[in-house]
Length: 181
Image 1 (tube, rainbow, N blue to C red):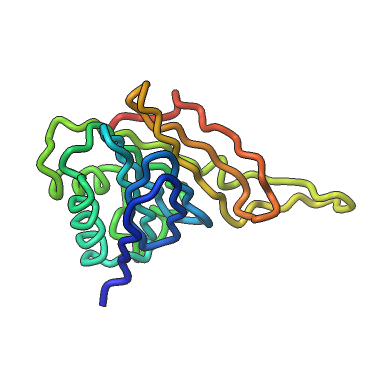
Image 2 (tube, rainbow, N blue to C red):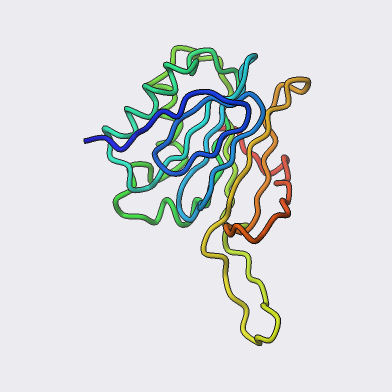
């Protein structure tokens, strides 16, 4: 039984693992520990999903099928953001390298001229902080990632913060870190 759920469309979405949706303005991917946040820029919004390394082959196929139903074939620019080190190290992960991710896009969508970009968020995911009163820093257990659609720039801007509801400030990812697949 597939765990994939379509949450539909909205201006601002929050997509936990195994969720697919279409956002016109922004999408938050909470609790990224080993997962990938995927957003595709289109004229009328972003097709978004939160892919877990625990996804089965069928669940990845279902995810891409549902993204297609939300307009995946019309996407001009796809972005994949997540901690490569943690995701690719997971023995059960269907995607073990960046080329595996690209193969899923190529297999699933008709638009062969779409551009695919990927950003390794391992450094951000592994941020260490020193809590007041402690002498040993702790590493974040997860990060939240936010995708914001920029219609006037034909792109998606990504930010991150510690995966905690008490943390409110976002830090923008450096766009120059994106690598074309």
